[in-house]
Image 1 (tube, rainbow, N blue to C red):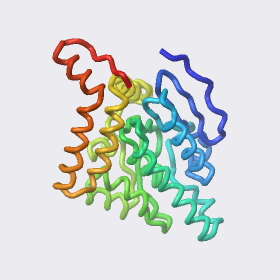
Image 2 (cartoon, rainbow, N blue to C red):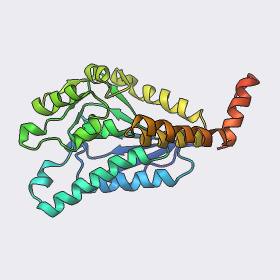
Image 3 (tube, one colour):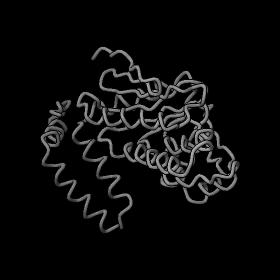
Image 4 (cartoon, rainbow, N blue to C red):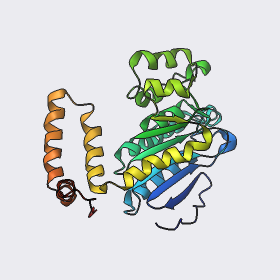
Length: 264
């Protein structure tokens, strides 16, 4: 096991890497980790760095303070003009897209509230684990700002009627409801949150990095294609997958009843 490296000094996002897992911790707890321009810039930089670092096999998005993320910084939005608004939403969209474009799995570690763009952040991670005290909402309608961009991610996790309920009422849902609706993968008591995240990261680390990167890329590409196009594109991916050294090793290991030794 690799020794943990010293946590990063970025004031908005703390970084820590241990045994192939990079944890990015939003560090604006006093503001419920609002996605200000600085926070978004810090997240984008760290996601880019994780993508380029071959030692990183999985990325966990976590947060300090009493909640995960309250979405955009409303004070910053109110005090800014149209050009700044355009830049903020473009930066937010880049961050959300990079969560799916990153060739390593991403896991949201959710405690407290995840609202508006914070709920979007959860929805755009590959996996999400929530404390049983977590709450999720798309409450923009309450302050006259419909959660249109958060609905992009949430609407790709949750059924239409349920997303519209969140959008039109602004009412929060609890962690158990988020699990039932498909927004998160696991709900556990807060003291067990890190262990639940570690369950996923340990499984990921035991698999081939090359195979996971190929499969993740294919999944997000095909999900919005027509049925025929999706089968065409994923059939080609399967062919490429079988050409990987790790594929040959994995199949041989299964047939020989032994543990695989991944080359990637």
